[in-house]
Image: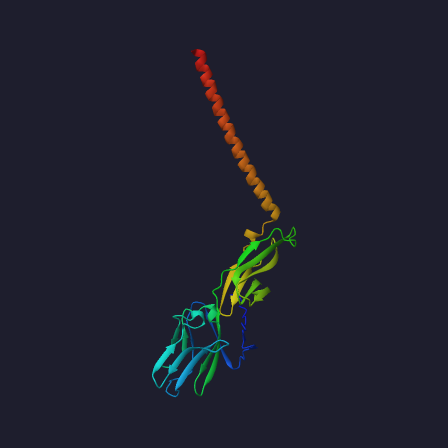
Length: 261
């Protein structure tokens, strides 16, 4: 099993970084459901329970305990929460179903006597990293093989090369929808195991390197292509010679028939 680098995703909230001592951090994979637990065993001790989201403290859920009513406001903020908000009728916990990355942010629980904050991170599902050969790399030599591990349209991830279980190199990004590439140089006869790992705080994807498949020499590639082209030419020439021979036989037969006549 390969080590997983834990990438701490930090978002700037209300102009400052959230205080990790006062904010409960929660992570979830995109598409899954998540519950922000109020910590209440029952709601009878509170007259009104409010759930707010984002830097502007937009009201997204309201529980009036005395009136025994619960209301979710899933049409706010461009309807990003449409049909995704629920409130636990026993504890007042907020439940978000079918999460998306745009649900990432700060959530606040407010009552007449209690205030709690949650920093929710919704991590996108990761694609498998792709390992490719780059014969045009200036760092390539007669004895080494230049490789690239690449991913596209990712955010808040770390891309890493491993030799066995040892980390060789890595690159992290917190921007949205960006493409990443990480180079690696290996020897043609290297017998070690290499892998490229893409991970976020809660999941990872690994692609293993097959040196024998990718790291044949560039000259071998050209020779192979030339050999293939030569074989095709030979087949074409042979076919043409066969057609010419058949035509000659037909002409000879016709000539013999005309002479006898």
